[in-house]
Length: 224
Image 1 (cartoon, rainbow, N blue to C red):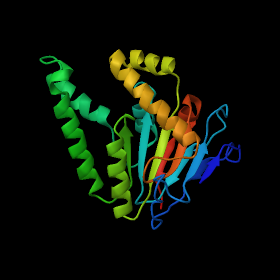
Image 2 (spheres, rainbow, N blue to C red):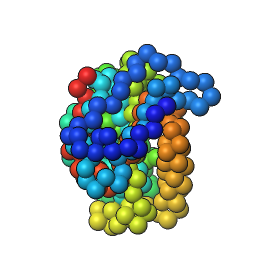
Image 3 (tube, one colour):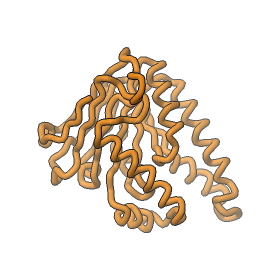
Image 4 (cartoon, helix red, strand yellow):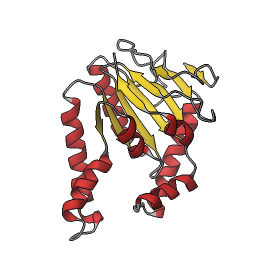
C-alpha cells in the first residue's frame, strides 16, 4: 500500500492511476496489495488537470451532499458517467409538481441502478456518482471491475460540512438534517480509513480532492 502525500504531482497536468487487473484481493483488509492513495489536497490549485484510467476501469466519485460531485462529473467526465442526480432530475420533471419526492424516491433509486447496470454491460470505463453511504454499491462495482479485468478507483471529495451545506443552498435542494448527519458520519469514517491507507473492499486506488483540487480538475477519462 502506498499513501502519497508528497508534492511529486503538484505541477503535473495529468495523473495516470495504476491498473491492477490480475491482482487478487488480500484477505482481511479487503485491499489490493499494490493499492495507492494520492492525496491532492492543500496544493493551492497546483494539482493535476486530468485523471486517466484504464479502459476497463470503474471510478466512483463520493462526498457529502452538496460537495460538488455532480458538478465535477458534468464538467470533467469525457466518457460514460452515471449520476443519480440526473435520474432524479428526470423524475422530478415529471412528478415533482404532483407528488413529494419521498413518494417516488424508491422509483428513482430503482431507475438509477437499472441504468447503471445497463451502462456497465458495455464493458467500457464508467464514472459513477456515489453518496458515500451505500457500501454495497462499491462492492458491486468492485466485483464488476474484476470481472471485466479492470480496477475500481475511488475519488473522494473532502469538503467541510459548511461548504457542503452551502452547495445544497446554491442548487436549491438539500437533504434532511438526519440524512446529512448520516452521510457525514459515513464519509468521515471512509476518509479516515483512506488516510490510513485502508481502501474499501476491492478498490485499487483512491484520490483525495479538496474543493480547490476539484475545481482545477478538468478531465477524467479512460485512455487505456
